[in-house]
Length: 126
Image (cartoon, rainbow, N blue to C red; front, side, top):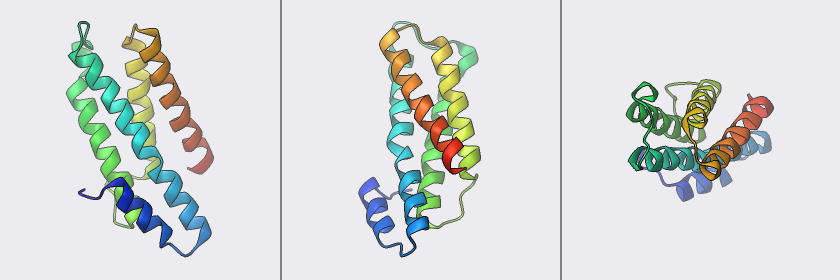
C-alpha cells in the first residue's frame, strides 16, 4: 500500500471510539518493528555469512512485506489478506528462524527484542 506511516497515524487520530483507536495505534506500532526485522534479514543476507538456502530469505522478506501491507489494511479498515493473529504468528516464526541462524550477538539480541515485542502484542491483543 502507498500509505505512509504518518498517514496511518493521522487516520488513527480520526477514529472516534477509544478502544478501536487504541487497537489501531497498537497495530500500527508493529510496522516499524517488522520493517526493522526485514532490514536485519537483508543485512545478514548481504553479509559474509548469509542465511542458509533452507531459510529462504527472499520468501521471508516477501512475507514480512505482506505483513506490513495487511497491518496497514487493518488500520485503514480495509479487508486484510490475513488476520492480525496470523500475521503476527508468521512474523514471530520468521524471527525465530532468523535468530537460530544468526551468530552475531548484537544482531541476535536485536532479533530477540523484536521477537519479544511481537510475542507480547500477540498475547495481549489477539
